Structure formats: structure tokens, C-alpha cells
Image (cartoon, rainbow, N blue to C red; front, side):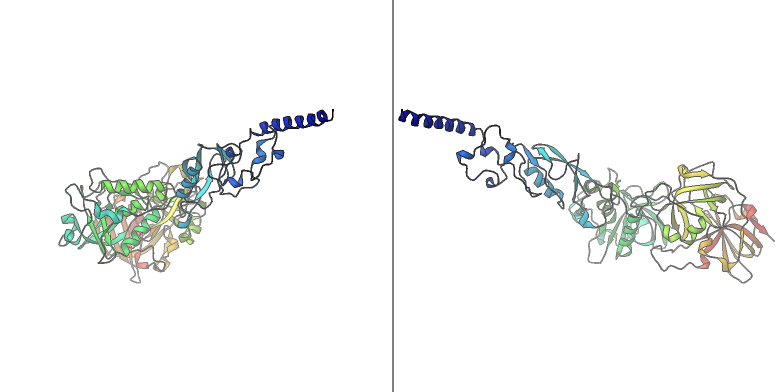
Length: 539
């Protein structure tokens, strides 16, 4: 009896142990550790049979309690899920390496919702898409949406252009032997100097004694004169800076010599020193995303500009989608009186304003408007037409961009969508002025200059010019634009006639340099715009 009493508990204990061990075999430590994690962080180091969990124990008790943000390990006992890592500060190359190592695929997006001004801010992680955050759990194989800042621009083809040739095997890069002894207008290639800057793809050049407007081939930078567009002003300033510091500039024609506006068409080459190779400015503007490629398929530069444009487009920089920090994206702009605008004009150049005034004069399709305080401004309408732009109409114009034309302040970017009619008011009387009253803040104002003696008359296809002097022998210019259809013959004027003339005050300086902060407005450059034959009286 004693032996039986002893053996029975022992047998029962062995049966229990065998049952417990069989249950424990359903937990496989090797299936918990991921392939990329050190097994010592997940697998138990020792396992006494008495500590094995029964089959009802939740497997999540095996999960680590804390994770470093960039530690790439799974978060459950299953091998097909991962934690999303923290990618802060990573470039696209680093992001791709990190996520593909986790078995994830990527769909790239750009975040162009903010302004980036430092080069160090580009090609950096911004966020995950679809609400994912660092630490989120996803299955291996999931496509992850990743947002980054725009990418770095690389100027590559500009320096590899000597590796490209035309259809006949001739190198694309020019050398001195290509242009020495030649002149651009006569021979299609030649050295020029800058006469004046216009915008990013148009410049006035001088060759010998001839000045002419030149449109750059293969590009189309955003507008920065009659219209203002994002990156237009930046492109114009970049071109001006390059050409101002160039040791030599060469124009090269290809195909048609002029466009429909009579401008010459050219590839613009420059070099910074006599020891440098020439650089193609047109190509440089494309590589730096100041312009998209507009080259014709028949051009010898077609291949290299296509490649440069494609590479630039992948960065989403500048004209490919980046916010221009110096552009006013508002629709109407800041509301102000014309007087306030003229007193603070420089502060609003390139921004947008909304002003109210009565149309005092029209020069062709363009208008002068004046507020109730007696201050006026010129509004460039361009090719837009509106039946509401008539003399005496009182209106509000929004979304206008202050800028300069040869030193004269003007408002551009006109749109009929931002034109609003106001209650009628009386046409203002002209402000009687003398030579001493010529002042920047009065440019655009309807004025009257009395008792001038004509000293010179000049008629040209672009209009007419009347020079006259006052009683103190100060010389003053009256300008008649060709869009008025007035000629000197219509006016019946002669040298020696005494006249009184009415019209908007304007300003014109052929050598105006808008980059010079110390520019001085000279009284000799002020002029009056004659719009109607009734505005001039002979005594």
C-alpha cells in the first residue's frame, strides 16, 4: 500500500509535465524575431519549463516595451508587420534605403505649401501621407506615401555642352574663331553689348551703332513687365547679373532671324573672363528652373535642352511648382489711395494693390486714373479690351502690380475680373505746374503747363516730340505717342509758337537702372503726354 501511495502521485506528476511541455511547443521563439533585429532583444535568454505560458496567453506579451524611432523592428509576434520609422532630416536617397530595407514601397510627393529659402531645406522629409506617423504599424509590402521638400537643382549640361555636337558633327560650344570679324545682324553671330535690360528672356543689345531688341531662343521665362508672374522678376535679375558681369557677350542666330514683333532671335553666349569657355545663358536658365524648355525640334540644341528641362522638372523647383517668396499671390492686393501709393511706391513694387480713380486720359488702350486727392498713375492695359475703360469713368482696379518703365511708375497686371465701377464723379481740373513742380509723386497726375515756346519739332513713326521752353528757359518735352494717331501736321505747330498744353505728367530715361538704389530723378527727363488735339492751345 505504501509503494502504491508513493507511485501514484509520481505518475500523475509526470503526466502533468508531459501535457505542459506539449502545450509550450506552440510558441516558436524563432518566429518572433525579425530578420533585421538582434535576436537577443526579442527571444528569451533562458526558459525554464515551469515558466512557459499556457496556450491562452496573448502573444503581445512578447513585444518590446519601448522602441527608438529609427529602430527597424516588428511590433508584434507576426513577421509581416513593421513600425514606421522617424525619417526627420533624411534625404530621398536615405528615405528610400530605409523603407526598402523594411520591405516597403514608396510613392513620392512634394510639399510646396511653404516657402523654402535656404538650400539646406531642400530634399528633406516632410511627412507621411494617409495619416501615417512614426510608430504607425503597417504590413510589409505596403506602398507608403512620402512627402519631401523640392529637390536640389544641378547645373550639369551647361558644363557638359562641349560633349554635344550638331547634325554635322560640329561642336555646339562656340569659340573665338566662330565670331571674330563677324557682326550679328549681318552674319548671324557676333559680339554685342547690353543696351538695356527688359526681363528674363528679352534684352536690348548694341552691335556697332545699332541697338535692337532680342528674344532669347528656346526659353520663355515668366513675365515681369506688363504682367507679373511668379519667378519672373527673379529670372530677370539673374539674367541682368550674369550679363552685367560678363567679359564678353556673343549672340548666335538659328533659323528665323526675327519674330512677329520684329525682335531678333538668338542664343546668348557669355563668358566671365577671357580664359573661360563660353556658357549658353538660355540653357542655364532652363537648368536653374527659371524657364521651361521651348526649343523647336529642328534646333541643334533640342536634345540638350530637353534633357535639362526634364531634370529640372523632377525637382519641382521655381517654375515647376515652387512658391516664389517675392511674389504676391493675393488676388486684389492691398487697398490704398493713389496718393498713398505714389508717396510709397517703392515699397509696393512687385506686390499687388487695389486703387480707385477716374480715367482722366487714354493713350491708345492704356489709361491714366486719378484719385479725389489729385494724384494720378498710369495703368498699362496691354492687349486686354474693355468697353468700360472710357474717359470720365470712376472705377476700382484690383490686382495691379506697381513697376517701372524707363523710370516712370506704372501699374500692370490688369484684368477685367478685377474691374469694379464706382459712383460717377466730376472730371478733375488739371493741376497748373511750373518747372519747379516736377516731382516723382506727381507722375501720372493731370497737369497743365502754360506759356511754353516751341524750340523743336520732331516727327517719327513711333510718334512725335515737341521741345519747348518756359519763361526761365527751362526745356520741357511734350510727347505724342503713335497710338493717339496724332501728328504734328494735325496740330499745325511751328517753332516759335507759344502754347499751353494739358496732359498726364510722365517720365522717361532711356538709361534708367532700376537696380541702382541711388538713382536720381532728373527734371530734364519729365515729359507731358499729349492725348488729344484739344489739349494744346496756341496763343
